[in-house]
Amino acid sequence: MYFEVPLRLIQTFKEIFMDECYMVGLGLDVPDSSVVIDIGANAGFFTLFAASRFPDAKVLSCEPVSFNFRQLERNRGLNMDCRITCLEKAVAGHWGKVSLGLDADDSFSTDTTIFERQDKEKMR
Image (cartoon, rainbow, N blue to C red; front, side):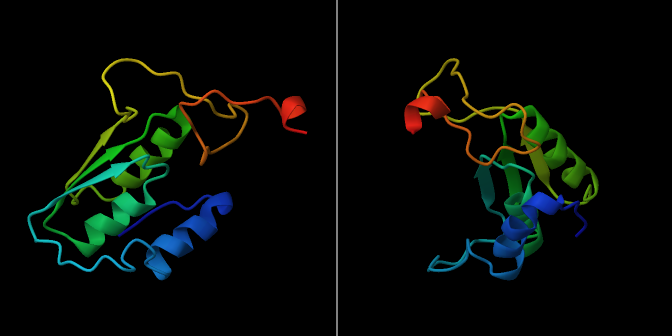
């Protein structure tokens, strides 16, 4: 398994790969031929974790933020033998278009939302 880990995301990478935070309390066996869906895949660390932990599974990764999606695609490209499909799409509880709130100046967004944000002046 190969991946690029931007310095800013080292803690997230550690939590997923070393601490296996998504396995804690799972309490069930994942069948070999499962489909794993990563909603809000960000740079793809859980996607890669799932692909490495369940090599016979298909992994579907959804990430709507362009700069995150580019990193997800780079990480998938380093692991072409894995069954990973990446979609530059948001997932919501209804069909149609949504507006995403995020900091466009940030190199990675880990707190994108479909809810209206208050500006910083209103938050003080």
